[in-house]
Image 1 (cartoon, rainbow, N blue to C red):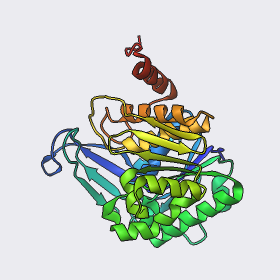
Image 2: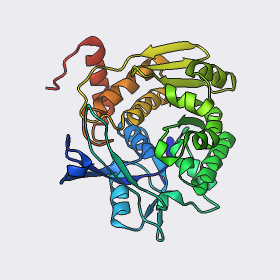
Image 3: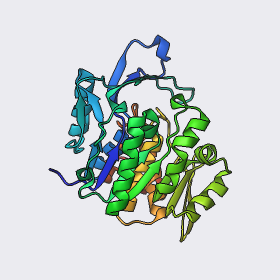
Length: 320
C-alpha cells in the first residue's frame, strides 16, 4: 500500500460544466470532470509533487468509475476509497462565467458520499500521513459523515498528524444556524485554518479580526483569512502577513479557494514560511481560474515556480 504524506476525506462528484459563457438553462454541450473540495485539493497537491490519499465513497455506477479513474490518473492513492453498491455517485452540473453569477445544480442527496459504515474510518487510513485536510462540507452532508469527520480528527490528534481545515461554507447544505452548530466547533480543532472573512463571522458570530484572535488564543497555530478584496492574510505566533491576489484574466472562478489551499499547504509541507506559502497559494489560484473546471488549471511544481517568478519579478512568461 502506498504511503501518503497527505490524507483528504470528502465528497467527490461527477462534474458537468456547460460550455463557457452559456447559461445553464440554455447550454447544450458540457465538459465532464470531477468536483469536490477535498478531491480538488488532493489533485492539486499531487500535481505539486506530494503523495496524497483520498478517503470517500462513490457509487457502483459509471459516474463513480469516472471519478475514481480521474483521481487515479492524477496519482491520488485510492486504497481506502470505497464503492457503495446501494447508493449513487453525486453529480454537480454548473455553468461557467468569468463576470456573472454562476448557477450550480447539485444531485447529491442520498449519494454514496453521504454514507459511511459505523466502524469507518479505521486507524490505517492515516498511516504515514503528516497532514489531514478536511472541509466543513463533509460533516454537513449527513450524520454519518459528521461522525466520520470527528473520528478522523481524533485519529489525527492521537497520531500527531497536522490538521488543516477549510469551512468551505455552502449555504445549500444548511442555514447559518446549522453551519454554526456543526462546523463552528471544528474550527478550534485545526492546526491550520483557511477561511473566508465572511465564513469566520458566520461560524463564530464575531467580527473576523476578533474571531482570528480567539482562534489563535484557543491554539489554532495558523489562521489564514481570505479577505473580501481577494487578498489573503496569514496570522501565526510569529506575526501577520498579507498577499494580494495576482491580477490575471478570469475564465472560471470556481475552485480558486481549493487551489489556494493546495498551494499554501504544499509550501507549508516543504517547510516554507507563511509569506512564501501565501504567494504560492495565490499563484496556484491564479493559474486555476484561467481554465474551465475546478482542477484543469492546477499546475505542476515547475509551472507554479515559473508563474510565481513571472508574477513577482516580471520574468519570461513563454516557456521556450
